[in-house]
Length: 520
Image 1 (cartoon, one colour):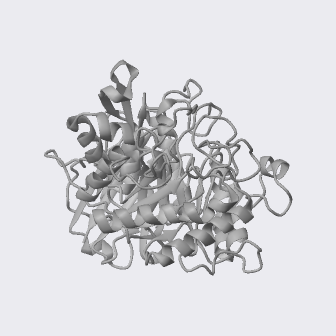
Image 2: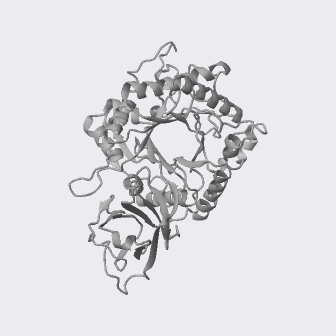
């Protein structure tokens, strides 16, 4: 259970202090994406299955038992496909990684009836209160690429024809205007470039490398297109680096492939140092935000801390905010990794060990890096494949529908995303700052009516805690609620006594994420 009066059978009580007067960053959103299978599920699967997925991802409501019905995402990341699904000569495999575009094959007009599966999930998101979208691109449209494909023949430059930058920028602006004006959907960001450091020279998915000068050119053209279309409320999100290290240094693989001075490295200073030749901080539609992906920096808790502290330092130096815009547990990662048992197999994406890593990583991104937004990669995917929701297509064919199942990472993300809403501010929390055992962070609502504290217990022991909320808030608590994710529960309401006192003692079970909600 989660509520108890401590006894000698448990370890020493941890004293947790929460201080609402100590404030840090304000949280903007939690997100996941429709890549790669979202378009197929939304178009071909039965309403029962795809509607359930939408509820799991976007619902902010409680079910009849008092448990969250979903994880309440506050932004949805939508793949702007390059059109590879429609190519007769497409060679990208797996098949579901091919994507539609709204441009007709002859490149002369738009067909807004395409991408219907993606549009389904956008509409469902809005119905659940998540009317907030980020359009992201992995590759320019195949009509505009140098090799006519959605992946690059070269891993050293952008796969876009020199005369197509403005055309592609115009396309992205037109898509944003369509969703805004015709569908009433709020397009908050366009991210025209994704992971420019990666070698996208094989047909494994849509993708393109980019040099820094090429990225600046793309941002400039997109800024012009948004301005000419009166889309001043749509902002360009620069960065989307494949690793956090590329935000502040030059990764070895990048240094080897690109000409000196034009590599996609040190992206914070590259884009936001006024002395940089690739400075874009003066563009009207580029906010002081840098996006990066948390891949490749989490095998140890020490690495999590040190890498993210460097991101925070560099971001503060140039006055920009950091958004962690994409992460999942990629295949091939095996022990030794902090927090994983030696017998864990990398294919077990549905269990608590990856979920605990997600919890520790989110703690690190918020506390060490000062992230204002946090994004998961795949919202849904075949056989789990490190997604929030696993898909099991009939006969292995995505076009035939199938079965669905939630993974523990869905509910672990929900320990944060369901309760920490846009506008909440991270506040001081002391007494739980060790990712090896217990790490916790706290957040306060804009009107100061609620405090949310998320605990990640990676140890194999129950950890008892007592909690005091400073500045007189202890006496103002009208109700306390506790929600747990572990091997046996999925973001379950523990129904602890509602009355709160700093003398009350709680337990954080082993290998669990626990969210405590204090209402005033």
